[in-house]
Image 1 (cartoon, rainbow, N blue to C red):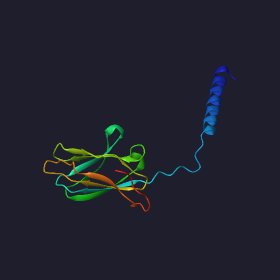
Image 2: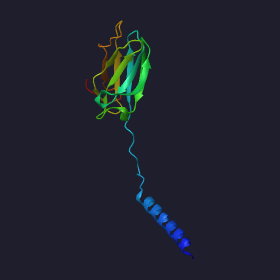
Image 3: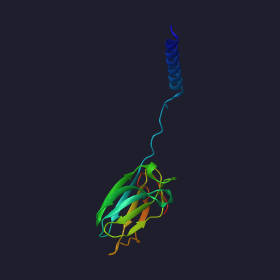
Image 4: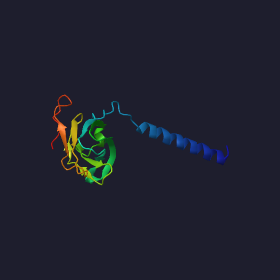
Length: 148
């Protein structure tokens, strides 16, 4: 064999050895951890304005849009537990469509599978300061909900 062929053969052997080593180091878990049960948010818009509801991230930054609810109607959204803030805290920002008004809820501690309710009350200017976010105790068949 010539020198170039030996180099190619040596390179191929080295690549194959690295591939076998990498494959031997990877271990797939036998039983992956199940994802925590999601939480359910029931929204009652008791005002005239249509609203958009956003999930808040740590520090109060706006996260993902959860849903929109038209005036004088009810909606429900299922939120993956991993979308909550650390410790299972749910906080939302509610924005009234057509006016610059928005309302930010206090944080609500929830456990996997809990249900929470958001009551939105707005005045003629879109002020939603009377709105509340609270847990529904025992809605998941045994959970106690969080704290206000």
